[in-house]
Image (tube, rainbow, N blue to C red):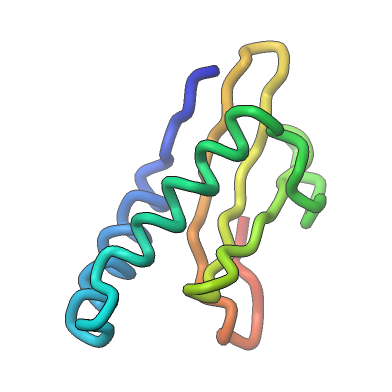
Length: 99
């Protein structure tokens, strides 16, 4: 399966990782490790995430990165055998992302 990371999600990941390194020195790789584990899971079970919203391009699903308390929003496009990561969002925020 092809995994594509949107430009927005890439910026989210970079920002979160910088914050994680600065503020969590005891576990600087935890966020990226958890993100990689989520990607591996989604590659084998792409529909495991709960449907968060239905967008004009299809269902947007969400998986929770439990240890780092972030949410990964994605779309699985079976016809293309493609998983698109749309946004990575911190769960402590009071609202979800605009999709």
